[in-house]
Length: 268
Ligand code: BTN
Image (cartoon, rainbow, N blue to C red; front, side, top):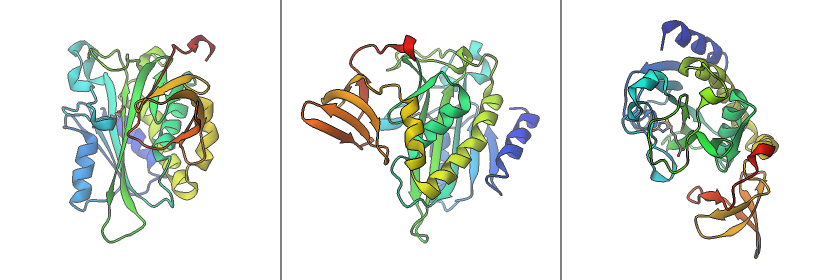
């Protein structure tokens, strides 16, 4: 990433997160893994770590995240934006954090994007971005944890095949957006969203999530076999599903969900 672009990102974020470091690496296993390693070694400073390539990118539910190194050379080094933001956070209630991050990412990027609970970013019926949040306990400060917010965004058509969900890429809605431009749009609002979440929890994000919800009103099937109609999220970020046995609240991040029928995306 060119130094001017890095400087612009640094200037945009600094007022929101004084003292933070912006680091760009050509290659790493996983930006999340690196910040979690650092946190366990006692390095708890706020940092935005960006990698041109990840050799072992990780997704939710123990899945792999394919980007950068897995793509063909014709995509160049800007096939994806992969970064993790690490910072100490002390919200009273952590529930809904990953949804709040999803809201921030989507609102910063493009009005055509939607969220599939809990935090996949979709363009119509395809996945454009994923979010993986991990936290590390701080032994000596009880209420505070070190949060690592990892975001991976396809910028160009991925070469990887066999993905669970067909991919979408940012160039479809924002042609010519490289990693630096995308990060400049995202970074400062993301820090603001995290601070808002720390102060007020998920409540200020509930309506915003529900307006962006790709599955609201649709028939869905959960990985535990439950079927029903998705009805958005409550004030803690739990997914509400109207089933034959009543309203079910899904809170577990271990549960995945898919639409039963192709949704009417032309109406979005
Ligand atoms: C998912 O869709 O399951 C979440 C994907 C998260 C990918 C990002 S890329 C930057 C950060 N480093 C990782 O190893 N994962 C996250």
